[in-house]
Length: 238
Image (tube, rainbow, N blue to C red; front, side, top):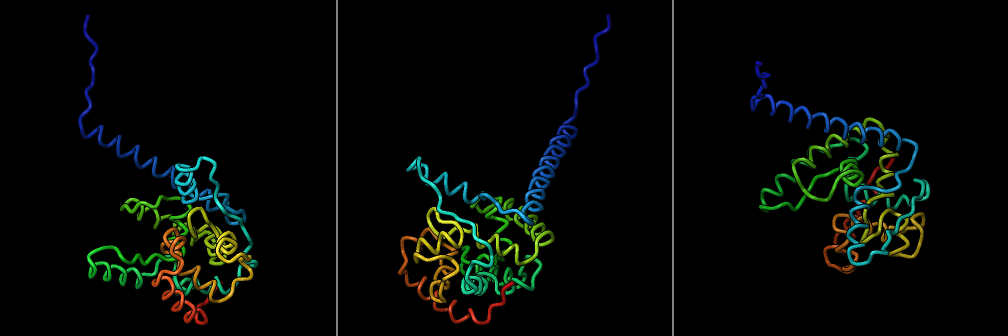
């Protein structure tokens, strides 16, 4: 009786199947993200990837730890904080399509000169993309995915909505997320009542919030606060 013929697949066949599987996973992942961004046009996120990461970090030492976070509408956040963040993080926020190419080039040149990463050049939209869906680890994959999500945000949401979500979810200390929680934690007042100096200091903390949470009189922080306060009158906000 003749033996059945067993077809052996070549390395190229298996490689092609693996690549196809990876592409399908990538597509499904981005469709999942697309669905969330669409939903957030008129619904607020309950949490973010950075919040989940932050909570896991806190619960390593205290299993009962909880995050400080409270969503507030855009209208209940002080214009001072909005101007401070635009002045500090993304002066061209209203003008770009999600990427500040001049800022990216300037950051690249600065990093080359210093021989290490000292500047990022990320816009508010890019920062939001990272906070919502990605981890804090710096990898080429993360930067690619950040760019894709940024395009989704810019195409599906207007600038005001992008900024509203950003103001409510970014990290402002160890377990502190969003403008309302940060305002009450640092200044014992609501986000609607922040003065110029308070808003400038919160904006100055954004690049390294957990460090500045415990080093509130750091010279770099105070110097940057002063610079931001001077720039605030010229910042355009949605």
